[in-house]
Image 1 (cartoon, one colour):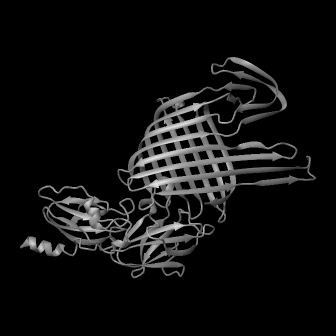
Image 2: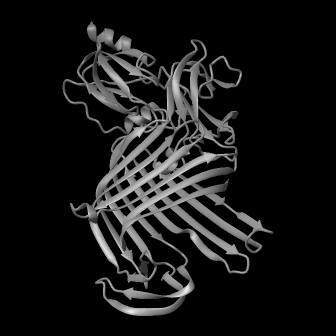
Image 3: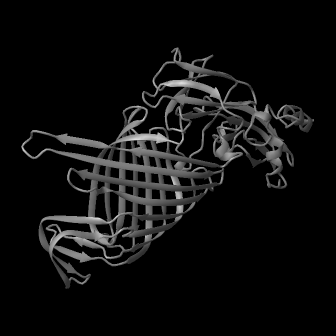
Length: 504
């Protein structure tokens, strides 16, 4: 009698011919997902399977309770083994109170495939040129004017995925952060039971206002986890400056400064695999009237490759490699000419140069730095105001130099540098924070510890503070610190740049 009663209660929840409006899903229908699950049901257990509309990486976990006691937590698209009995299933986004509840009977040896009693909503935040951007919005339910929390765009280069809201069916509105649901500056969408709705939220990057809200092509928003796992982007930046002076204390003159940066990224992203190929190319030149073009401090060519296998949403092993060099020679000019003593690594004088007007500290492609690392990647914090990733593992670095020298502070003694290879423990901290709706800070701290002695530690620390001034113009403040071979002392550079940006 009790078994018959369980079956009658479970029938509305079991997967029939249709599992909600699964034709709108990015993921396969629920029964197809279940068929791919390898779990075997042992004696004395039943199996509860909760399907996913988009992918386990995108959706919040569900919770199984018996009475008020939490029993199991798992990601949608997976199942849990339970002892026979009556359970309460909590699914949804927002706070615990906002999650949807359903009673589920579990029988021994039987699989219960849940028919979604919730709706799914995916919002991809993009700029007018269709590039994904990390801007925020708030989501409200119209009927109760209830706030379901903060949503934001993704940082694809860090392996982030578009968030999927799991919500009770109804009408929802998207507003700017800080606006009330009663504002007229909002976009609304109706969600039906078992249906996945995808929308593009278009933001004006100059003032962060919302200017569009429209459906994407089928599977368009989540293409990085469905049909097309690849996404490639290219950003071009330039910073020209021309200054002239007449009738001043010195002679009339004009100075032209040019700097450019190319940032390219190609990302492969699925529930389990994340791979990123990153290119950063920076060059800068200056020309004073009556003189030739000269290199400025901007000279960087760097390629990074990272692979992460996700054991869960927040942790997994990583493998990375970095290639870093410069494309032009670095020169030191003397006015008036002077003598320079050349010393080897042991401090012995091996050469004396006299009447030096121009001294080449390093030729093109020197130093050439290679870095490799393997270990564990962990997503420590993931929120709109702060994202923090940490990687800990084993690392190696190789520095190759050709006729490269380190000048002392008086620029009279040049030490000839040698190749060096270092191995040890490594740690990488990747941080992105937003102080308000406009400024953002990107920080990367990369350290290699070959020995316990602190003076042997090698690190680089790069910080970029961005302040958008208009749609295509940013002010960028750069602070860089490093201590690494072949120059084993603390070095730092600071720059304030006005960047003209164009995304492809």
